[in-house]
Amino acid sequence: MGLPTVAIVGRPNVGKSSLLNALAGEMISIVEPTAGVTRDRVSTFISRDDRYFELIDTGGYGIVDSDELSEHIEGQIFQAITSATLVLFMVDIRDGVTPLDKKITQLLRKHNLDVIGVANKADSAKLFPGAGEFTRLGFGEFLCISAQNNLNKTVLMDEIFERLAEHETTDAPPEPVMKIAMVGKRNAGKSSIVNAIAGTERVIVSEVPGTTRDAVDVRIEKDGKTIIVIDTAGVRKKAKMADNIEFYSYVRATRSVQRADVVWFLVDATVPLSQVDKRLARLIAEEFKSCIIVVNKWDLAKDSAATGDYEDYLTQMLPALKYAPIAFTTAIEGRNVQAVLDLSAELFKQANTRIGTGRMNKAFEIIRDERTGAKRTGSGWPRVYYATQIATNPVTILMFVNNPKLFDEGYRRYIASRLQTLLRVGEVPVRLCARSHRSDSKSKKKPKA
Image (cartoon, rainbow, N blue to C red; front, side):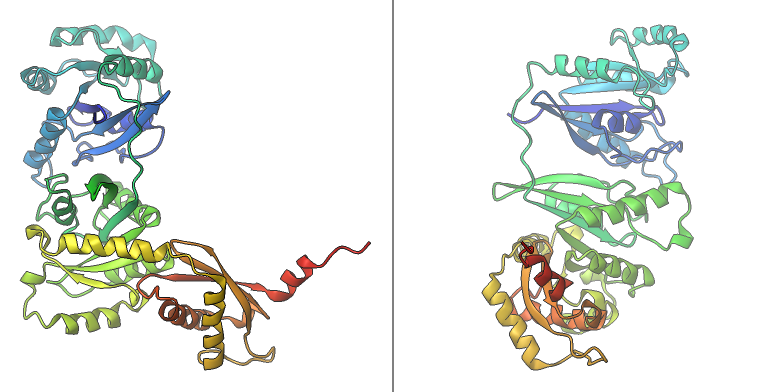
């Protein structure tokens, strides 16, 4: 049996995202005073005493969206409602019953749903009597809470678990075997890719740039294994960020790169690469992330050259990601998307490779004998005495050397590149650390009697 789902529903700006964050105990949904920040379904798992449910945040019902996405937002709300085991119907206690609250009431009754009424923003006990007005909506007494101040959070959790008693499962949600982050500039097709992978309209797709705002985790099953695909907001120049929402979206996108196992870096084939693309490429490389450069909208590219020519163009423009394989897709048709998903699994396997010490040091002997890339200084030639792998994903190698200062950034890049070839991990980054061989030798000396 699948996990029960609890959907938070309400009109714009009643505090739905604040409630999801409060119940989860961490910042998942973007919270902003501006109405209509949440557009997609944002979800997380909640557990207590080995009991679990999935909590879903939805967009504000009835929002007049500035980008004319109201119909899409309501579509996401309907999907959340139809799949929900329980609904938290949230209202603003300070505003009383509004026409939109009545419309939501009709919608919930139409679907015959189990509903807990929640009157939010009850920051002081003097506001509690106002909750009595909401009983006429037909869902019993509304629980007074303050999502921002965690008031009555435990009481609400008790009520949720009590209502879910007959639906509950003690099976924890399966741990994902891999996390894939979709990053790129605005309107590159990230959401279309996510929907193609999921096989359903899981996130809103629109020609309007900047449609996605939150980082949305989408769980999919492939070959009996769970994979999380993270849809992120499109990145633009910091100077052009219009408001706090865009800034928070950018922060979420960069954090998604950090927590991903594999990054799909989406490039729009219909426009030239920009400074934003180059900045994203450097970010991915600096985080030592396995990456696939996904060239989307290839079917629409004007005067499209051969794929080989475009690959040369990408290598020239994005030198930081020269290790990353390149794939060409048409996301809106789902073309080549599953093949890229299979390639992600191969990169994940490479990034988790364990390399034997003997094989490792044989590779370093070859690099030493080539005498390429190294520079002689007053302190002599850089020398590696031996090396060992200390971590995976990324492949991380600790070198014991004569002097770490002799191993400048250029020489480290050369060594990493050669190791990628010699150790057959050519499509994933290799991180190098250097430690003085002398300090290691001293640490191994026996203390004097």
